[in-house]
Amino acid sequence: MPLNEIAIIGFGPRGLNVLERFLECVTTDGITERINIHIINPGIPGEGVHLSSQPDHMLVNTVSSQVTMFAGDSIALQNGGESFTQWAKTQGYKRNKNSYIKSIDGETLTDMDYLPRALLGEYLSDVYRKVRHMLPPNIQIIEHQKLAVDLTKGKYFLITLDDQTTIECDFVFLTTGHGYRKATQTDKELNDFFIQQREKNPSLRYFRSPYPVSQLDSISSQSRVLIQGFGLTAHDSISALTIGRGGYYQKHGSTLEYVASGTEPKIFLSSRQCLPFAARGINQKGLTGRHTAQFLTPAVVDSIRKRNISEQQQSQIDFRTQIMPLLMKEMAYAWRCATSQKHIEPQTFVATEQEVTQIERILWPLRNQTFDNFSAYKTFFTTLLTTDLEQALLGNMNSPLKASTDVLRDVREALRRAIEFSGLTPGSHRYFMEKFNPIINRVSFGPPLRRNQELLALMNAGIVSLGGGPDSYITCDHKNSSFTLTTKFVKQRHEIQIDSIISARLDNYSPMTDSSQLTHNLVEKGFITPFKNGDYHPGGIAIDQKLHPINANGQPEENIWAIGFLVEGAHYYTHALPRPHIHSRQFDDAEISVRDCLNQCMSCNHPEEKNRVKETA
Image 1 (cartoon, rainbow, N blue to C red):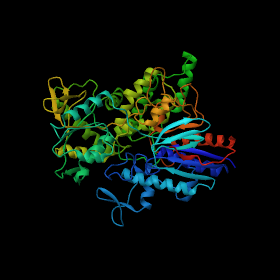
Image 2: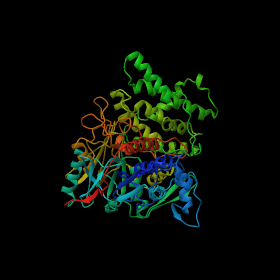
Image 3: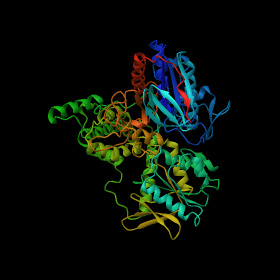
Image 4: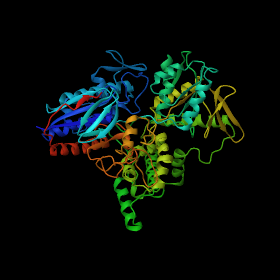
């Protein structure tokens, strides 16, 4: 019987989705073709960036009961498939003060816990072992704990690994996930300054990324550290420099007090807008509850597109004029429902001027604001942070603020329908990705509530301070061998001296700026091309509807599939983890590609069977 060789390059959650769908499709469809699946991944299979070896103070950004790696129809569920929280309970994990340990003592985990990412890594690797164990005999797994660096195409694909081992395969899945950007001009300038001046200032550092956070151990307690960003990556950096150095929190009602270890550096925070990420509201919707959209639905998006075709002879949608008004109406509707605590008839709903103003303040808090000096901005920032925490504690159904911002998360399918595969006009696509999507991330996909409580406690303890205000910028001070962060206010020029800079922002993926050797070679050989909407490149690689990369000749590479963060551009919001009992894009993409692959496997004929893994001289 013919033997089919399949490679999955990169094996974090997206690669795991692919393997789980192979189990499902092969088993339920009774497929008997012999298949070798090569898993090419330098780390533990399944973990991806969620390393089980990372410090346990780094938390998952989602309530852990809302994370699963099993589709609702998965046969793996018949053998104990679980959500992340259910798995952790089964493993004997309990909450012990500020940590989670295997113990008979401690508090039982709840559906509201935000668990450590190290535990998520354990969960993912355990799911891999479960799925692998359940594969039928005609599916064999071959692990290569290496990095793929090149791909060439002849009769078969030839994959080169970083130890010069080569693997011949018929089909390739690209599920490489998050990567790192090439150094930008700013990166080079700041790093060059660090190299030139470090003998004069031993505390000088520049970190293009905080990961792995163990590298932050080199920062001395005497250093003045600037963390650029307020999102999850920034909170990881703060946690590493505080809890990671022996500090801890004491709870006093709904507030926290930070008890310092004495080894923390002085930490400053800044970002382009210098606004705190909003805390997640206490979940009052249960595991599967969500806002039911009334005005912005996939069907409404489809009707807008049809109208554009009829009236304008083109299908693209303008986000600002055709989608944003509906989105803001949806948010205002959720605001009124939470305020009144009763059902509001959507057919007769019209947002009041006051409701529109409230939504605009949430989305654009700096609009029409000026600040005379740093002190005024610091007061504004602290008020924003504390008010948001008060609203988060009310819950995502009782708080009008949290109910309205949850809408941005719950209408994701409608946004996908509008955005994906050049669904927006190029100009409004640029506006959405560069202006509005960062707002969505700030107000709706922020850190667990506790993280902002910790931030406030650290500010009260004098460990963390605001570095400046909006539009601050960094310069290199050769005289003092330090960096300078400057913000211009109406009546003041505010400056602080900095020793260490941590760029705490996740890099967007683009084949033009990704630093991996594999990406470089895939572009050079024409296997992949950047996705473009007209002249706008939002990121990611170009793909067709079956997830095949579009090559340099404009044709789909029909034996290759790309899934996840690689295609963030043609697709929208690819990095979320699947939720239990909720229809998941992640499983859909995996199934589309796996079924396409299996159909090709059944039509292929390889008369010779040979060992396609070989060492090259």
